[in-house]
Length: 466
Image (cartoon, rainbow, N blue to C red; front, side):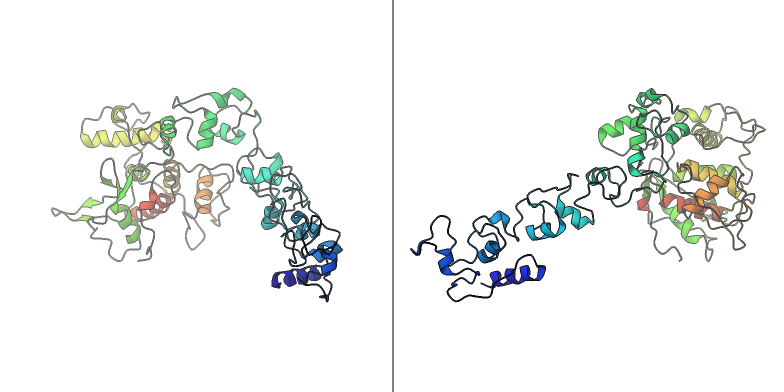
């Protein structure tokens, strides 16, 4: 009885149906006299009669009298205002108010049930809520926003955008599934459709697959872990992630860092080891004849030292033949004989092979010279494989000494956009100023904990102010 009264009140409020007052001779209080329900008066519930002892004969949730007065069948539960015959999550009363079809689960045919559309804030009578040329169902399947005609904010509507979730990619001239911008970056032709089907680096992945997986189509082993990209895909591992870092809680401390602002950055890098050769990213220098070590935070870092740290922090492994690889630098010894000379050669050769460094126009590299802030930033970003896709991730800087046409401006803008650099209080970046070991350590740390190419999650990020 309480359920029926509630329903009668509900229909009165929504102005869909109106309940009559309880009648004398209406045993079940459904708004119909017993004589109207037991038509032949034989006291038996015959076919075509409603039950005078059950306010809702068909069990659909609406009182018999309300159904009769509204022209619905009190013996058919599907037409009750509280029923949901199409199982779309909306009762018939709600569908009547919305104008949707109570017998059709997806009124507008966009692939999403009416009730789900309402819950998502979409229009159940409009298959393309945001008018971008893609149906709401297509947008859900693609991962785009059915309420935003330009999901990635690149100025193209999702329906016209071949890559609606990639702001940096707007064209696919040859319709091969790879963006023009990506093809141009890797020196492919955006007019040659077959480029996408080539396996340029012979790693087992076609170029189109390299784009999909985010790997480098010019490198057999994008993450430098010794396993080809194609094999990693077959193995179900990530060809972009090298599980190469370990964090050791126990590590010697540097005697000269007490009270220095760089202590937390250096400390974490000192505790982070490259698994393959058990070497910390930062080692420091021996101090006298004892086992203690110093870091010399305010000393300018040399080009070789910075390059070594850049490669260690990205787990970039020199190849066996890098130690004897010919290099175009006139100031680098040919065929080094000492272990230290071979190590330096292998680091430089690996960086040159991977397009991280190029040297100077006079064909020198100047290993032991200080390196300026702009050069250091470029090396760190390229080693960590942060790629600037057009203007994505770049941000206009407040630095008064950065011109728009300088060779290093894209790197500075990207590093600023990713919050890797802040500059000086006078709004300068000082690109030509030599970078200190402390400044390099901070930059390496910030890049490292943000680098998706290595398992940087092992490095602590809390209490950096201590």
